[in-house]
Structure formats: C-alpha cells, structure tokens
Length: 499
Ligand code: NAD
Image (cartoon, rainbow, N blue to C red; front, side, top):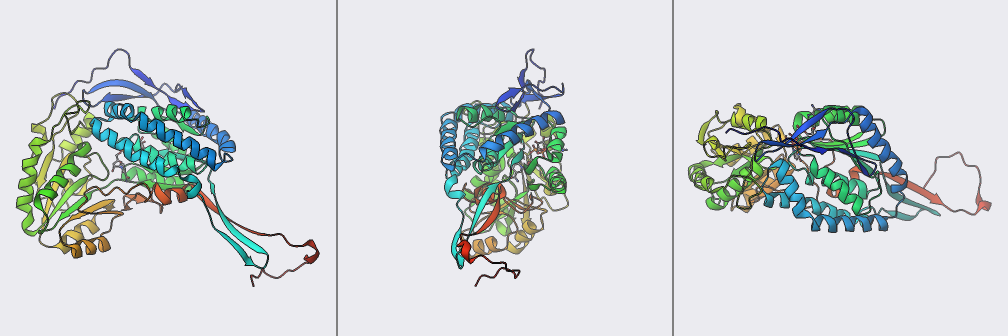
C-alpha cells in the first residue's frame, strides 16, 4: 500500500484539440496524469479557460454550417472508415487506456469493442434518420416529419471508460449532423486526443470533433456557453445533478447519467458456482470502477453461507497487478486518493477478505475485498464505493431483496440469479432500475438498445446511445405541404380543416 509518486524529468504534454489540430493550453493551469500501476506521473494535461472553450465551440459552430449539409451517404462513408480504423488500432487504444486508467489490457480491449459497437450502429445513420410521410393527409395535402441536428453539442465524461463513454456520445451526435465538443476526464485524457487524430484521418472535417481538457472551469464554461445546444454527461450523481440543473436552466437539452450501487440478488435455488463466478467477475472486473459493477450481493435465505464460501475461495485466484501484463486480471485504482477512500470502507460489517493484505506495493492497488453483514444505514452499504469491494447483505425472502433494490436511491443496473423463471419474470416486472439482468450480472444493453438508469442514476428523460441517443441529438420538424392549382386559391379565415 505504498507507492512512488516522483515525476519523471520530461512529462508528456496533453493539449486540447480545436478545429482539427492540437492546441496548447494558454492558462498555465495543468493537471497531473499518472500511470496508476506504478504510481508515477507520466504526463500533464492542459486545463482550458473559458476563452479556450469558446474557441472550441466557435470551431464547432463554423463546422456545423457545412457538416449538417453533408449527405447521409457521405457521412456513412466516413463512419465506415472510422469503424475500420478503430478496429485496426484497438490494441493501440487499449494500451493507452491501460497506461492511464490502469484496467488490464483485455478489459481495455473490451471497452474499445463495446464502444465500437455504437460506431457500427451509427454506420446505419441513413436508416436511423428516416422519418414518416403521410400522403393525402387532407385533400391534396401531404404531411411528413424530419429530424434535424441540434447544432453544437457537448459531452462531459468520467475517468472509468475514457474511450467507450465518449463514443456513446460523439458517434450518434456527429452521425445526426451535429458538431461536438468533448470535455473528457482530466485523469485519463489521452484516449480523447487519440480519437480526435483518428477521426481526422478517417476524413471527418476539421471542427466537427473538438476536445477541451480541464476541470470545473471548463465544465462550467460549456454549461454556460450560449452556442451549446445540448449536453450529455456521465459521471457521479452529485455532479450529474449539478450539470443537469445548470444546463437545463440555460435552456439546453441535457442527459446526465450518474452513479450506481448495483444489487445482485441470489435466490436459494440458484446455481451457487455460477452465481459466485458472476459475482467475482462483476465486482472485481476493472477493479470495481464500473458503473455497472455488482457492488451489493443480496443473499436470500439459505444461500448466504455457501455463496460467501464460494466467493472466498475464488478471490485468491484473481491475479492483481500491472494491467500491461496479460497474465493479470485486475489492475489498480485510478488515484492514490481514490484507493485510500475505497479502503476506508473496510471498517463496516464483517470484513471477510481484506484487499489491503494482498496487493502490490507500488501503484494505487487494493486487492479484491469482501464484506458480509452490511445493512442500509452503514456507509459501505449506502455509498457508491467504486472499487473492488463487494458487500453482502442477508435477507429472508425474495420480497425483502426486491425492497432493498427499490429503496436504493440509485437505479442503474440490477440482476437476479435463479433457476425459477416465474421469479425472474416477477423481478423484471417490479425492479426499479433501468437495466435488469437475469442470470447476467452486468446487463449493459447492446448498441441498438439504449443505456441508462432510473432515479439518481439518470437526470433527464432520454437514455444514451441506441434509438434514444438518436432522438436526443435530433429535433423533430413536421412539414405540411400542398401544391394547389393557383386558380383554386381564395381567402379563408377559418381554422384549417382536414376533411
Ligand atoms: P466525476 O463526476 O468526478 O467526473 C465526471 C466529469 O465531471 C469529469 O469530466 C470531471 O472533470 C467533471 N467534474 C468533476 N467534478 C466537477 C465539478 N465539481 N463541477 C463540474 N464538473 C466536474 O466522475 P468520475 O469520478 O470521473 O467517474 C466515476 C463516476 O461516474 C461514478 O460515480 C460512476 O458510477 C459514474 N459513471 C456512471 C455511468 C453511467 O452510465 N451511469 C458510466 C460511467 C461512470
């Protein structure tokens, strides 16, 4: 639990990306970027001023003038090229993610692949943007709907998926004809600049995709900018609420996805080994830094003791270490501060496995941890821990378990493990969460559905990517048209009739 934080002599500089080229920050304010596996600082990233955010928005505004007029066929062609380039370079992207986030290479590759699915969905943009047409809605009158882009839209993203979550936003936004300003996490910003260079190479016109790095100053400048029409946010619940309130108060469309505390219910009839495998995978994958991680296991009735034993047996086999080593399965946490905060939860309940006892000395590591006997009202039960700490709460009945899920202030994902189809069907019907898994611990929807939670896990009414993503980044217009013979024209002050 010690780490080295001495900085190397020459730090890599990470700039903004404005109007199709790298733009060095002018503020002099910068943030450190670490390799969490070694604890050493590798880079520093520029923090944007309001003027730099304005420059990015202006570049996007100019580009919107032409991009919205680019044919659907041409846009699709560019998207196919993007798809090919990301696919070809996915291992390069994965190494960037691992070096700044810490997740193991195989997981980083999985992130790129799931993000790429959203790009692939967007390759079908001509079909996605098709609308409706009613011929002869009234005599000689046709009515049709069209969906048009909003203009300059912005994305503000968290540290835990530095490639995939931005893809959830920029791909549908740009496919729909908008231009985009991304404010990525300041903790692992390199993937965004990698994306910007790749999009340029794929033929995306300059100014359509821009990156401003930074902190709250950059976020507030985006939220207050009069030329930003819509904001997509993914991050923690307090900031999601803040972003949603501030953006909508400025008249912007906003979808703000927040944090999570995902409960996995295990019924007494479940296959214990399968449930234990799923719990270990979903709790400790990416060191628990996933908004869809399983963080609370709800053990119903007699299942608790054998399930905890099965999980306990599996934990020593999880290989913890530098994500660059393909033998490792779980990497470090994002920062030393976050690691220490996560470790501070190993006080509540009954600590069955303490990850502080089994992790590498260098870097921001914490081993997989397991706490039994958690209950609402305890910090480790109530808070989103966002680390490799799996809590267990024991309940007597299915109804008690569902009550816990539904009383949670979060409603991102939840799962049930059972062999009883009727119980699973009932759970799907009554669980108050946006994404439900039946014997699936991390039910992230495929790209042609939409992703999003309920309650404190989402502010706004549209989920992200998939059909709701297309809806979010466009607005509807209905055209009523007729081509009458001028000879029939007359003044008529009555309200238009359709019959
Ligand atoms: P975060 O809320 O700290 O940061 C997210 C973004 O907001 C970053 O770009 C950051 O620079 C910015 N930000 C941070 N503090 C701010 C402030 N005071 N004012 C304005 N902007 C601010 O989140 P994080 O730690 O980067 O990411 C982890 C969180 O994201 C977890 O809570 C996780 O559950 C959540 N998350 C949710 C989803 C989802 O789909 N619901 C997906 C991924 C991550």
